[in-house]
Image (cartoon, rainbow, N blue to C red; front, side, top):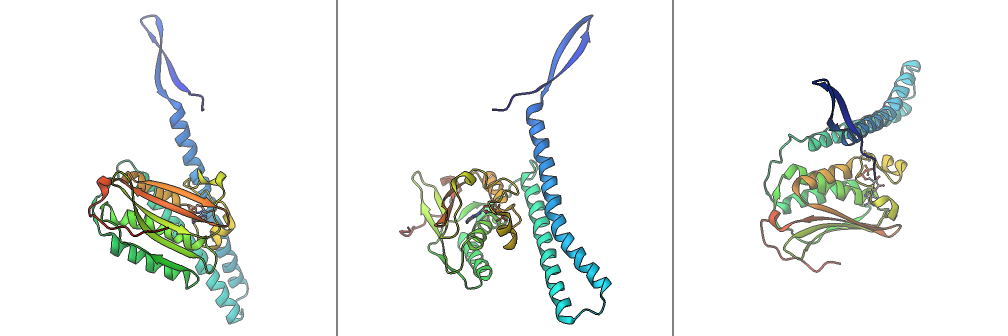
Length: 268
Ligand code: ADP
């Protein structure tokens, strides 16, 4: 429990001293600290690829007659690092927009089937044939923002691919909830997450294993984006995971966001 800190001003009034509580600093200090942390983390994340790119540029300037094969491999590495910076900046902009209080949710009918089929194709491309990825059932259509939901689903599915070793299986399916809601489930049999990390996964830049996340082009912002999209839709995220066995991420939509009746398949 954090100690509360109130900002007080002493104001002279008709020869008496009055104490006026102007505002509670606890919350604003917390927000300030989060902002400072975010900037420090983001700067660090951007500096790393930039250092690599600058290093190769210096080599290229100092050794203009480098072997073509070596030069090509340097260019490839620079392109990868450039892509990493681009992903990071893209995710930072997305997150900042989603967090902004005056960015309204533009809600419309979201056609779930084509949305998930597109995400399945992207996941297969990312997996490059290393995993079995299945979409087992059609979901209901949803009331929400298609771009935001695409980004949330796509982050969960790409994480399942990135944190599941070769030959693993990833299943995407829908389940009906008691009380009329429905949930979209992303289940993998990958590396899993130990219990102590689970409550912190949606924090910005929180990673269980930084080097693995970087190797697989992670920005550390994916689940923070998922959390914000779901908050804006009043949907919730559930995580169950066992190290070395796999993880199940569940997005639960309340009944008022579902547009169409659907028939769920029996899924494990
Ligand atoms: P990143 O870009 O690092 O993947 P995310 O915010 O998407 O960032 O996820 C945060 C961390 O949660 C990851 O670094 C990883 O350690 C863990 N994680 C997310 N999804 C999975 C998963 N399906 N299996 C195992 N670990 C996961």
